[in-house]
Structures are given as C-alpha cells and as structure tokens.
Length: 393
Ligand SMILES: *Cc1c(COP(=O)(O)O)cnc(C)c1O
Image (cartoon, rainbow, N blue to C red; front, side, top):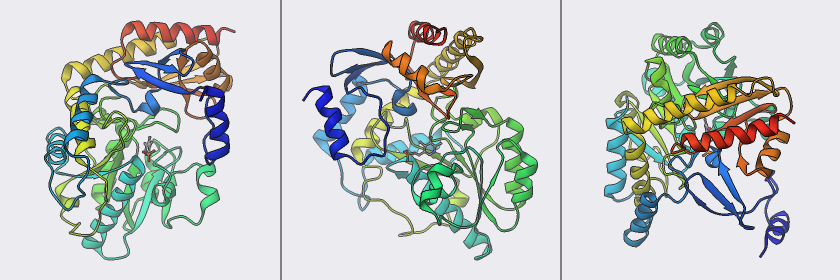
C-alpha cells in the first residue's frame, strides 16, 4: 500500500476522532522519523512528549526483545521481577512509598481519584468527596479524568460527568482557597500544564495548595504525566516548588512509547486501599516494565538531566531570538516549550512539516515543542532555523 491508499483506508475503516497530518510514518531513529516516501523529519514533538530516548533506541529495543523472548504477560495474580524492580526505582527516586501501575495516563488519573476517595472515606466518612481541579488543565479522556478536565469541547458531549468537581483559575491561590474545604477529598494539578498551553505553576501556588491540603486533610495529586520524568530538566517537575504531593501520576515517557502509567503514592494513601479495591489485567507487565526500567535508569542520571536543562535553555534562547516574526512569547522549562504566536499555530505547524520539522500545538495560537530528551544543540539549531523560515513569511 502506498501513502495515498493508507490515508484513504484510514478514512474508510477508522473512527474519525483524530485530525491527522497527511504523512504516513514508517520508521524512526533517534530524533528522526521517516515517512513512507522516504522523506525525513526532525521530530520535535516525540509522539506528544513520549519518546524521551528517541526512536528505536537500541537499549529499549533489546529490553523489549528480551521481554518478548522470555515473558510478556502473566497478569497481576503472580509476581514478576521487572515490575517490582521498576517500582523500587520510582520509590527510591521520589517522595513516594508505593506504586500502582496502569496502562495509560488517563488510567493513572482514574486510580489516583479512587485512592483519594478511599483515603477520605477511611478518614472522614462519606461526606468528603469533592475534587478541585484547574482551568486549562488536562487529565485524560475517560469519565473520571474527563470530569476534572476543564475544556468544554472534551466534556460537553459526554455529560453528566462525575459530580462534585470544581474548577479554579490556574495559579490563583485565593480562588483555590475559596473552593477547598471540609468536603474536598482531592486537589489535582499539573505542575506544568501541557495540553493547556505550557503554563508552569508558580512555586508559591504549589506550596499554597500543599498548605491548604494539609489544613483540610485533602489528598494533593500532581499530574506529571506530561511534565514529569526529566522533561523539565529535573527528574520531577514539582522539584522546582520544593513541596511533595500525596499522589503523583506518570505515563507518557515512562516506557518510551509502550503503554504504561504509574500512580506513585505515600504510605498514608496506600494504607487505605486494600486487596481487590483496584486492579488491571495488563498493567505493569514484565515486557513493558523491563523497557521502562531502561528509560528510568537513563533519564534519572544527573548528567542526562543537566543536558536536558542546558539544551532546553538553548532552545528557548533560539526561539526568543525569533521574536517579532509572529512570536509573542516563549515559555516553558527544560525541553517542554510553548511559543505564543500572533497567528494560528496550524499554518506554522504545516509549513514546518513541509520543511521536515514536526511540532504540535497546545491551544489555537501556541506551538508546543517537545523533542526527544536526547536532542543535541545541532538538532535545536536545525529546528530553530526551520521555524525561523516558517515565521518570517
Ligand atoms: C496526556 C495526558 C494525560 C492522559 O494520558 P493518556 O495516556 O493519553 O490517557 C493526562 N494528564 C496529562 C497531564 C497529560 O498530558
């Protein structure tokens, strides 16, 4: 099948929920992707901040092959070493005491909400069930995650959603204070909003939420599905604020593209959730956790994180230099960068793609730039040159 056939058959056989760019991708290597016609693209979106180690990483490939050769799946009715080893790494390098694995980001959020509900019920009985989330936050597409995601186009076709969710403006501590009280069981926040436009929470905001949650015995959930695991130049995005959540959700980069999510929790949370109260058939299987251990070991190295911070600063500097050519503002930390434009992002994204660069949007006028974390200065120069070309016309 050639590209046109594939595109036509997609239109015929798949549900039309995705507006895809008209390229058929065939293989990837490092920061490069190749389409079915042999054209090469510099990947500055990483499958939505997923391919942290780039495409076809040899060490990840070897772990996947080893998993396929030895053991892919047994269910969570038995122990496997790769699952336990990955959990130990996550706990050792974070605030958390225990881990629950999932298959995706939205499932990690679902589990986090259930655990917060359970903790509130054990501590306070049935009345404490409300959830506070924030405008422009994104937490996923299943019913619970959708209920705490503010954007109308995602929510409205599917109401009624989970009741008792209240939204406050992001970074507005006074507004959050007005909503958090004895009936609140959870506060959910992205330390850096991804989908919503690459907006970082201020350290004061996260610290203030921590204090409010302590005051009212509320479970504080940091959604680091997009911003966590090295993306911002520190292992966890919330390190910048110097406070810990009670629960943190992870997913996108954790297995470099294989489906996995994780819910990291304190003992206080874990102690309230018992046998049979949550579960998943596939989650945390030996193949995917073996691959995730490779990702974690590489990303958690101080030299690796320092390179992300340094390359991120260089990327922002190169993008800032484009100011004037439709660029209003450059935001972000590490290799998660938003560029506000005075024109719609869609045209710029298409122009960049035609010139061999893949970037995506975060809202109508914001470019989202999230290359693999292994990107080099030379790749950044090439990408900035292409964007400069696209923005000067
Ligand atoms: C992508 C994302 C999710 C949902 O993850 P899926 O794996 O697509 O279900 C949740 N929260 C944040 C912050 C995300 O970026």
